[in-house]
Image (cartoon, one colour):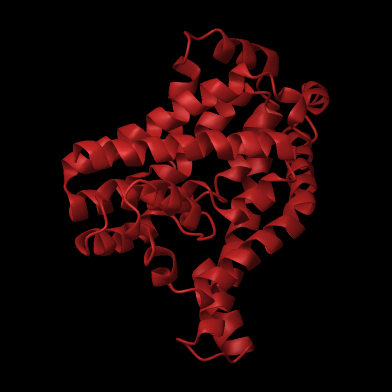
Length: 314
């Protein structure tokens, strides 16, 4: 549906020519803005609606009462089953925060979701072999678990600046009729939608410019030149690129076949999928710069370590 709308807007309404750089950027912008804004509205509304039937205190205590790390493992595993890119994962992350899921557990989902999914797993299995695909999937889940546990242990809940749902969820328990629950849920979804619109447009706009005008070779020409700093450099160069693992995996196969070490290539792919600038611009509306910096810093270190490990053992 979004693809069709983007085609109509770009080719029919704007009369742009297929294959041109500006056309590629415009199509990318329209498609992703529509997709992410619709996801934000409906996912947040759905989480709010489910929340009217759930006692948030009992849910939170159950997650917190799980064995050490189990809640993070469940969240990371759930993230691995969702076919979301970094920006598309944010609506569900916001829904978790509104449901008062522990911060570290919510981050375990946010970190793992764009890094590991069934589509990327199948593509990587076909390109690199199923053993490597399985190792990569486990690495992505472990990164989400460990990073989420670290963030959760730092006591950074006050750095979340999005309106908490504590009072609203408690209020929703008074709802007895389905239509009241539904109306309140859509109101919550639209409220979050309005707050994030400019950040989504700005973030995706930046990603569209890079996607349409900056060739992939620009980021990869320099990666294989520095033996010890190749992995950190690959992570740094991957951040401005906005794409999902399933999209970038074939590119990674090509550059690996061209001689770039596997760990360096995978580090680039993980940073592209999990540390995009558009994601940061959207998350800025949800959390403070301090928490955003800690999140990016911890995930960056984790990706670099995974890249070095792959280069060492593969």
